[in-house]
Image 1 (cartoon, rainbow, N blue to C red):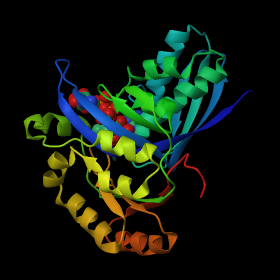
Image 2 (image 1 turned 180 degrees about the vertical axis):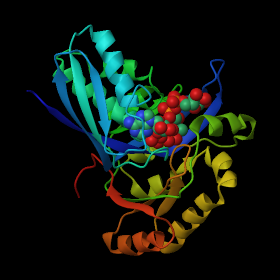
Image 3 (image 1 turned 135 degrees about the horizontal axis):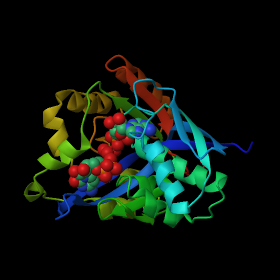
Length: 288
Ligand SMILES: C[C@@](CO)(OP(=O)(O)O)[C@H](O)COP(=O)(O)OP(=O)(O)OC[C@H]1O[C@@H](n2ccc(N)nc2=O)[C@H](O)[C@@H]1O
Ligand SMILES: Nc1ncnc2c1ncn2[C@@H]1O[C@H](COP(=O)(O)OP(=O)(O)O)[C@@H](O)[C@H]1O
């Protein structure tokens, strides 16, 4: 039996501008997104009986039709008109509801993997278009790498990879609802945007400019609601990261660190403060 084993990496938002509220209930955004090497893994096998069956290593998450990878498989099956089914096993490493797009990345990995297994021959753009039906972050996860995302997040323009660095991720034990954070966003308070500056810094391969340009408009909503996120940011800065920012709607904070010699100090400072801390690399960067 042919099997597929495929990685589903987490994302961080190097910059996130909210440009306004749309008539469809979503917000117009402009974001620079990139992937890090903290990944779930999806093992997939085709099934002759046509059923979609998902199992998760993480018992607290639904494996039924509420699971984004399950939804992706059903959508692709309908779109591709195949009689085949699939068994999907998800090894979960990415913290859930963290602002790291773990669910979206699982959905994207299911689309890419099943497209191969079922020999549907869809292009990445076609898979991304399908993925947009599941969530705004899914198209980015289908393409992967580093990108400028516009619209509600589903319009993807690939940009070059940023310079290599360490990324320390720290997630406080709070649950944040993305929809709730967007709903509370006061777009009239927006005073500055950052995506163009960040995109230029990435294209220039300029690490210091990337650090200076980190910006997330959703911080103005999430930080006052959860003081522990601000504390993590402050602790990261005090421990010597080059720059720190909340990812997406939160609550995970990421810190960028160029020098490996600093990494242990940052990691240990955070570990004493919060349980879920990861030291990872940006994915796809040129090796130094
Ligand atoms: C904030 C971001 C930044 O990358 O990531 P996360 O924090 O979720 O990782 C994304 O914009 C999240 O994308 P995603 O998590 O796919 O959101 P969706 O499922 O499409 O939408 C969830 C809800 O958020 C709101 N929403 C989402 C995207 C957007 N551009 N405007 C919105 O107002 C809508 O109310 C929607 O019902
Ligand atoms: N495969 C999956 N992995 C993680 N969460 C999932 C998955 N499928 C559905 N979900 C649901 O999606 C929601 C958001 O999860 P996630 O993608 O981890 O958040 P975020 O976009 O904030 O990083 C959670 O409430 C979770 O129950």
